[in-house]
Length: 189
Image 1 (cartoon, rainbow, N blue to C red):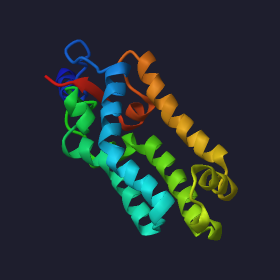
Image 2 (image 1 turned 180 degrees about the vertical axis):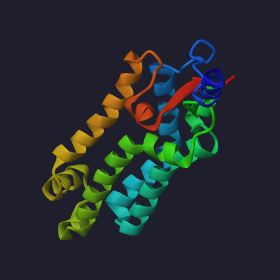
Image 3 (image 1 turned 135 degrees about the vertical axis):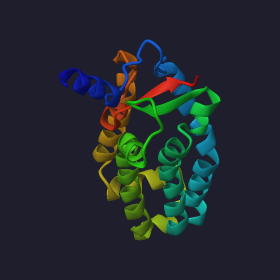
């Protein structure tokens, strides 16, 4: 009976396929993030044009929503963002299976925190009466510092940086975000 219980436990516990699965390291994941940055580029450029010329808060919110949804949706639905697909890596659960939606969201949490801080700062900026007259990067930056403390944004961005740097030092190449979501980034078979 006890041996059967142990056998059942082995079947339901995550397989330790560390020697079979090759974990994707820091530089390949950095490359995937760079490619994703290129994917984001049209939205970022539209965002900047909106910030200096159009000044539409609804457009700003729509752009931010697209940027927030991209990574968790792609990793949940396809196991990888376009950058990861291009470099033949994917994100999997601890059982080396597809991510659940909750894992994809938890895995995105450091970026989500940073995006929320940025969104609050941006909303406060758009609500500032002086914003409509600000047309240069210096004017907009000065206003943004007046309406929201940059320390909070810097702290949130630092969390994202630390989460990524941990990948370089972890034996299974997990970032803080991977550890929180119980996921791995591996090379596709």
